[in-house]
Length: 454
Image 1 (cartoon, rainbow, N blue to C red):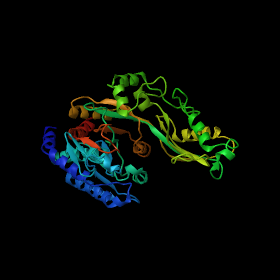
Image 2 (tube, rainbow, N blue to C red; image 1 turned 180 degrees about the vertical axis):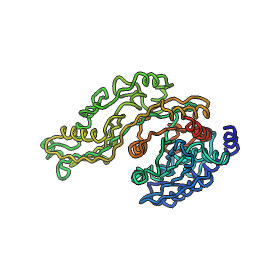
Image 3 (cartoon, rainbow, N blue to C red; image 1 turned 60 degrees about the vertical axis):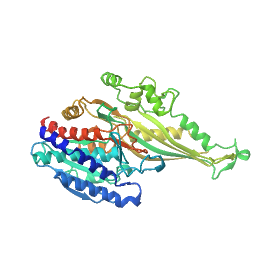
Image 4 (cartoon, one colour; image 1 turned 135 degrees about the vertical axis):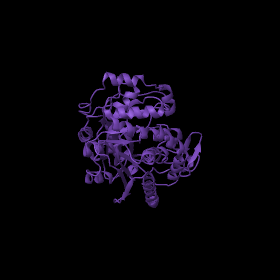
């Protein structure tokens, strides 16, 4: 590995320069006026594979292209599938950026630009690591395939279809994704569990039009009043979700996991200060980290109905709408929870009102064995590069493609994050620590070695 380390050190500045070039491309997948830039970003990824000595192809979809690359020549060696995305979130609000979002600017140890950490910088670490192996040794110790998409920020509309139709092409022993975070600065981490999700929209309908509250109020049900009561019934005063059967399939945290979470450095006062709130709230009997990572939730994402303009307007509104999402833990079924939520809300509906329920999407929670051979290889690689062993953490969010890999390809995923939760993902002034960018490349390079030896 000495020659690999030397190559990485000698090319570190070029790697940074190429990252900056990548970040200058406004590959916003949600806005059609940037479609040419999204294609330009896909072409940049192709050029990076060519530079690394990998064969690649651009696969057109009804949306944005998928880039696939592979180097699978070593019989009997493990095959690794690396996933990432080259599309980025819109940069709005632009006036909150200190420097333009697509003019990457280095301030201190960080590069500031949209996509810096989500996911261009993190994804590029794996391409640069295979480049190092190819340039130094002419091959890798494992077989590596790359699946890089351009629609992650708009729901990966065409990815699942591609995976379903190309299972043999994508056949692998383990998947790798770097689109998560370290636990904290100088505390590298491996994410071994993700929460799932189910999301819906519920509309309560009353009279055919808004009515005068003085003339009609008190004689018929008010949709906004009714919806407020329905929403309030979702959770008790101790943060316990009241949807029937909600906790039936929840697997309790082991004492070992609870002890490991409790041992992590966590400053609750600083956490509250950063969020701008004065106290925590959640399900009784669990710590803040446990609530965030390992307990299911039910949250109202938005609610609207009636008159919300300036001044009074005394009406009985004709309708009210709420958007709800539930974060689910492993073993909970999204369809089962959604059906129970719909039934529960309907049971709380006031007489004379109708309810419409739209189920948007769902994904199950996932948990992986953090003592598996591939996890051990990842731990060793990270410790070699970062100088300390990673902590094992859960993630409160959802990464649907991880579930797709497990369901369609039958493989688990190593979630190796080089960024930080404070990197302003999806927010103004997104940034990525360039030191972590280089350490991520080195950890990736060592990962191939340790996976080959596992």
